[in-house]
Image 1 (cartoon, rainbow, N blue to C red):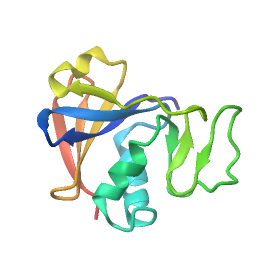
Image 2 (image 1 turned 90 degrees about the vertical axis):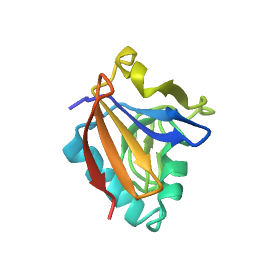
Image 3 (image 1 turned 90 degrees about the horizontal axis):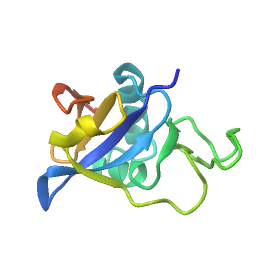
Image 4 (image 1 turned 135 degrees about the vertical axis):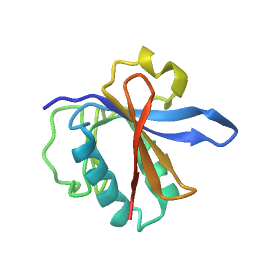
Length: 137
């Protein structure tokens, strides 16, 4: 099922601003939190900054630690082993940058903010309100 979301991290220089990447598919919290935990535990080797770097590298069709370089994908998509399938395989655009207070301007059901300070993911609704904090470990 298509559920658009953004996965992001706080900009340390501007704590009210996030750098985010679009995820097109499987953005429900029950699925996305599990995917982020899997990427964090395997690909990122429990290093939250490595998780952030991997996720913020591209916009994504979907995320999943079980993706391999041989994962089948649609034309113009590119599997990134242990992270997911990119939305497009051309040069990535810069991350989307916005204040959480403007999250309602996005066409997304959920916004996830990864915190390297405490290895957590905060789930926000489409209007930017936080509804839960989940440990990556």
